[in-house]
Amino acid sequence: MKVTQIPFKNTGFFSKTMIDYLEKQKEIQPFYNNFPNISGFYNQIEEKQESFRLQTRLVLVDALKKQYKGFKISEKTEENIALLKQQNTFTITTGHQLNLFTGPLYFLYKIITAINLCEELSDKFPDQNFVPIYWMATEDHDFDEINYFNFDGKKVQWNSEESGAVGRFSTEGLEDVFEVFSSHLGNSRNAEFLKKLFSDAYLKHNNLAAATRYIANTLFTDYGLVIVDGDDKSLKQLFTPIVKDELENGTSFKEVSKTIERLEKNYKIQVNPREINLFYLGNNFRERIVFEDGVYKINNTEITFTKEEILKEVDKNPKAFSPNVIMRPLYQEVILPNICYLGGGGEMAYWLELKDYFNKVEIPFPILLLRNSVQIISEKQAKKLKRLDISLEELFLDQFKLLSKKVVENSDIKIDFDEKIQFLEKQFSELQKVAIKTDISFKNAVNAQERKQIKGLQNLQKRLLKAEKKRQKDLVDRITFLQNEILPNQSLEERQRNFSEYYLEYGSLFVKSLKIAQKPLSLEFIVITL
Image (tube, rainbow, N blue to C red; front, side):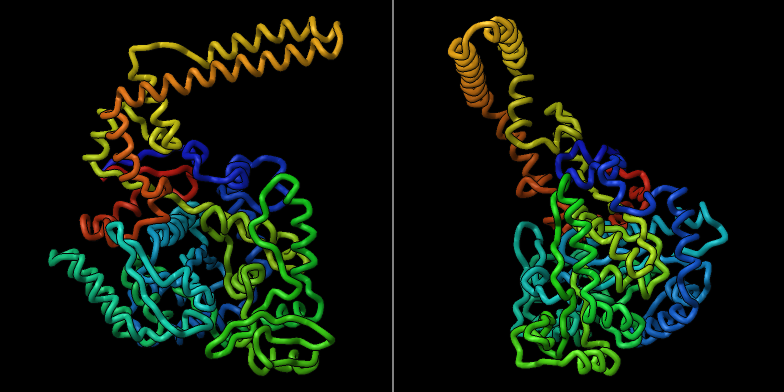
């Protein structure tokens, strides 16, 4: 195995928001608390330790024991749950939807980043304990986003007529999905493991939350991963003061809206808050709570509450109140002794909208860490890249730019059009000095001629490039095929492929290799050659 790290910026797949965050640009600094480095973690530990109550820890541990009832867990996971009672124990959390059979590859990358960060912090802070947390997004209701995974270029999909929180969905109907999936796997030892993992998860557990817990526990239990389901009465009781504040005062909308006004001057806004950022959760529905005509209404239902009634409902039935994307992060931080949340670029972007809201309700804002991103390359692919003289950084270039670059490098015709365009611009710059001393018509004529000549050179460049690509068709085809193979749909494979493809080939070595390669605080993109 060979591991190479390259800057996130050089892949071209990460937003300006994330690049500026990683580079600690001054424009983005007001929107986060401590930065993900050792000094930042030292400050975060101090801040969280002072504010997190022992009673909350006891409720959390009791809830986790109940959630794990009926599941076989490792000594390491059992030990980590017990450690959560101690005031010197902190969590590192990542969250993910309940995608069928883990969904895209980055599900694994998130969790391994959390596990490795806990180990690294344990070395740096030996007097503290650190527990990796996977927060299951059991209350999401976007079933179409999670009901499939890709395997070997094919979509394996599950159809269900249920609605509401996906964690409560029955696993009925997944027998047919299992038959389809297993038919593609073959009969190798690794294939048999995947079949058993799928069948034990979905055919032996009654709902999607339990099935997902089984899979994550099976893959990562040896590393002490603790899995949290927020759809829990006792945990939501801890959150009821915030829920009541939201219903009465709309605090999240006010604070996040003010933050967005400042943030959008330089960055794209990821999510926008609603006036009430809560859903009402029933057995078969999850609908927005809206305040209209002096009453609280549950969208798309006949359910209504007066102010007094809905506040009583919060106390009586806390499990019915489900935070949306704006409030879920706060719910997590209220019930966990958490010091760091890690996720992908999109997740980090919406967390950056929340700092002022956290400050308003006096909950410490966690460190934000961009999870490790990984590209797997086989030894065979690595050899092809070397023969084609394509570096790992060049691999991530836009395909048109990559082909153009390699065709020019391989061409016998050595004409630097960029150099000629720069020379032309310099000549016209001299003419501009003359033009400003004359009338406006001459200045406009100079500008028009400059645009015409530069455009002419650019068109000649395109025609020459097109001719060379045609002449070097074999090279173009080889590069195109290889890049498409490594980056399906011209996207990072971690967003497209499922872990089962690699597990089928490499078995448990795949997970072990990921764990060895991932360096959470390096803040760089990782390429693994297997």
